[in-house]
Length: 199
Image (cartoon, rainbow, N blue to C red; front, side, top):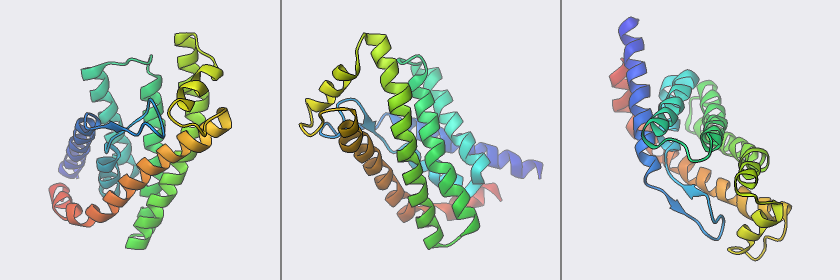
């Protein structure tokens, strides 16, 4: 039992380290957001979570963010890291918890959809009540300035509701969908050798 627990913790640390590395391979989608960047760090969180369960998934997220703080620090007074934590947990935990009760391909797909939708909803609230207010306070901006910045790359954005509708929601939905599809396509192949490491 002790050896199994140690192996599971080691795998969680390994997957968290991989997630941290993937943070550096990011790119923006200017038409959807002038500031947000997409990366695949949620992929090892999902795959590791499916193997290790919800506790393992939380450990992977914590390791990823811990490494980020150690090696990069924070440029947003920890608000960016807080948002990353909330969005990661909102994405991974619903998917993992659903898959634990429905261990089929359909169960995995349904869990990924539930996680993606939950994460998008959380993204709306974290952006409106954590991220944007922080930048407004830090840089002396207001909602008009934030909306103007987003409207400069997307003419459909005229106010806060349209910013949510044409930037926050589609950006997060697209990024979560891409990650979910990759997780669905690769999980079975990767899970076989990974599960052997904790047996």
